[in-house]
Amino acid sequence: MKVSKTLDRGSIPRAPARITTMKTEIEVKFLSINHDAIRKQLKAAGAVLEAPMRLMRRVIIDTDEMKSKDAYIRVRDEGDRVTLTYKQFDSLSIDGAKEIELQVNDFQDSIELFAAAGLAVNSYQETKRETWKLDDAEIVLDLWPWLNPYIEIEGEDEQVLRRVAQKLGLDWDKAVFGDVMVVYRAQYPNLGMHDNIGDISRVTFDGPLPNILK
Image (cartoon, rainbow, N blue to C red; front, top):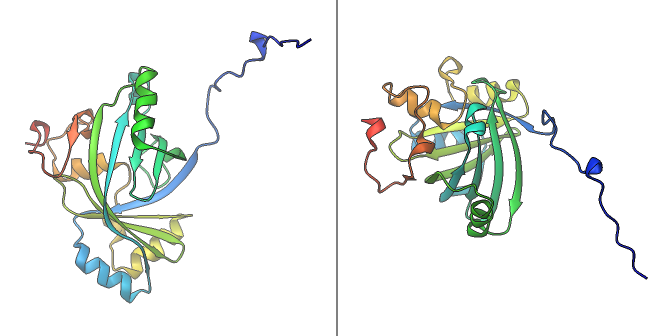
């Protein structure tokens, strides 16, 4: 005779008050960078091109609770893989970005799963990205709608980032830290701290300049 086991409610794992398994990203951005010029610098420094410029599409899902922590969920189609990420910015500093990321099978199925759970997409976004590797650091050339080109350097510690920036002829005093809104606010000073590109339903290269950027 098969005996079914009832799970006692007291044994159900509960979400921890504070998640301690999030990965800390050590990263820095340099704004208004000529991508052709930086490619020459990368080649001269011996960097390896890992992925050429390609279109990425992503969706942002958030709630009032996530917004209060400067956090969001992102589903991103990177061309060769699809990732699901919870991202949180504890501070606008070199190590302020925290994330949990995993690879998933399908972009649209992931979106529909969240929708079925009552978490609808707030923003569909297009970007373009090119990826290089130099001295254990990842350098990405980023393009976003309505923004000047910029780059991001990510590595295991600040010393690696500073060394790579120096090799590329970048001024560390001009480095900025944080998510892409740091870049938008630098280019569009009229943006307030509560204005967010993630509140725009479609962020695409062929879309008109949104009112919050005018």
